[in-house]
Length: 210
Image (cartoon, rainbow, N blue to C red; front, side, top):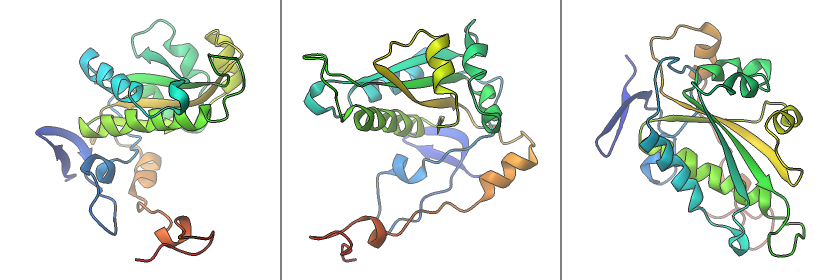
């Protein structure tokens, strides 16, 4: 039986697969992962959705440009199928999500229309804040790069200065859903490169000591 996560009184059927960290880290960060078996009938409340967007809104931003934009399409929205049609075949599981959120990065600065080289970086930070907030309240928020960015932009009238970055599937985990391919993908161990390969002290390649 899958053990549910419990964070600050919030219980979900999102199974606990805590990250193997070298030191303790914030609980939603350690417990967050990206399941694919979503409940096709479950909903995300307006208050929960607003919490995700508020978390993104207060992300750090270079020059306070806030280049992120979010195209929010709940399951019941009449244009939902248009967004689903942009997903790569391997992401068809995401059609069961209660909400799909396309993340967009504005590539130019509002104050002078010059290129903003940090736009995609900052949009990524905002998206990460949204995802961690989802984990903190027991929701799945699974970001995907597998979608047709051009088709999405055309279908939804995205201005040229905005780049579609990802589509985030938001919903609730369904432990009763039997899908061998998805179950196999979800059963794979959670892994990350060791710190010595990604964090350097003083010079590139000199690992931060344990």
